[in-house]
Length: 446
Image (cartoon, rainbow, N blue to C red; front, side, top):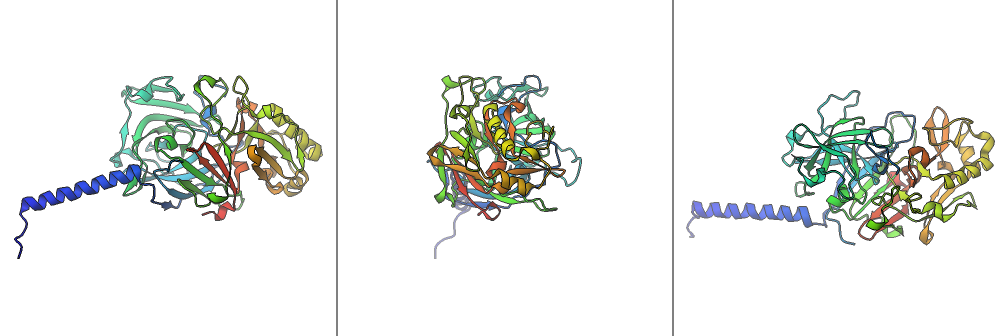
C-alpha cells in the first residue's frame, strides 16, 4: 500500500494545478478562436425626436471647434439587437461582467459606457456601470500617451482633470454629449474568455443613457483593440407596433450565413492622402451610382469619390439612421422624386433640417410611384431598397425618403445609414479589407 502524500507534496500539487488553470485561461483569453458564445440582447425604444439619429464620430467635435468633415478573430460571439432607429447591443463589461447597452457605430473610434451613479431621470431605469464592482477596472492618468493632444489618428479632445486623470469631452453631430474619464476595462464573454483591458470612455455626464461601441478602423476602436478581424450585423425592417421592437443579430467573428455574401473592397488612404474633409478611419467603399425605378440617375462617379479636399468620400455607417448625399448626388435624387411624385410633396417641410422629400399621403402608394431605389457598387454589387421601404415614418402622419443632404450636417461625405441596411447582412471583414452584403429576413436571422 502506497504511503500517503506529505502536506508539502499536496501543497505543491495544488499550486501546480492552479498555475495550469490560470495559464489555460490566459491562453483562451488571447488565442482561442474556436469558442462560440450567444447572448440575448435587449433594447429600450428610442424616445421621440424631431431629427434622424446620428452618432458617428467623424462628424463629432468639441463645442468650440466645429469641423467638416483573413486572420481569425480571437472571439466568436453572437447576439441579437433591437432596432429603433439606433442599433443597440448589450455587452458584458468588467469582472464580474455588468451588462451595458451600447449603440453599434461603425463610424466612431472611441467606445464608451455609462459610469455615473445618477438616478435615471425617467423610467425604465437604464443600467450604469459601477467601477467599484469590477476587479479589472483602472483609470488612465494624465501622462498616458493617449491623453496627449493631437496624437496620430485619434482626434478625441482630452485634458488633465483636477485628479490628474485623463478627461474627455465629446460632442456628436446630433448634439449628443459624452464627457468623463478614459479608463481600461475588459469585455467578459464568459468565465474563460475575455478581451484584454481596452481603453474606453467612462461617461460621467452624458445626454444619452446609452454608450457607444466604436467599430471604425482606428487603432483605439473596440474592433482594433480587441483584435476583432470580422464582425457583422443584420438590421430588421421597422415595424411600428405598440410595445414591439424588432430584433436582429450581431456577430463578432465568423458568421455562419456568410457563404452567400457579395463583397466589395474597402478603400484605404495612406498618411500622405490625409485631407481636411476626409475620414481615413471610416469604412469607405466605391459607390458607383443610384437608380430609382429603372432609371439610372445622371450622377458622375466623381460625386462618390474623395476629391483633393476629401469631399465626396462614400462610407457604410451603422451609427447614422438616414443616408446622406453630397449636393451633386442629392439634387439628382430629389429631381427624380419630384418628377415622379412632385405634386404630393409636403411643401416647405424639412425633417430634422436635413430631409425635404416628405409626404402626407398614403406611404405605400407614394412608394409604389417612386419605385425601388438601388445603390450600385463596384463588382456589380447592389443594395436594393424595395419600394415599400423607400419612405421612413417620421411621425405625425409624415413619411420621408430616408435620404438627407450631408451639407446640412456640415459634412462633405456620402453616408449609407442603417435605414438603407434593413433586411441585409452587413459584414465588415477587416482582415481582408472588404465589406459583404447578403439579403436576409433579419427578424429571423440566426
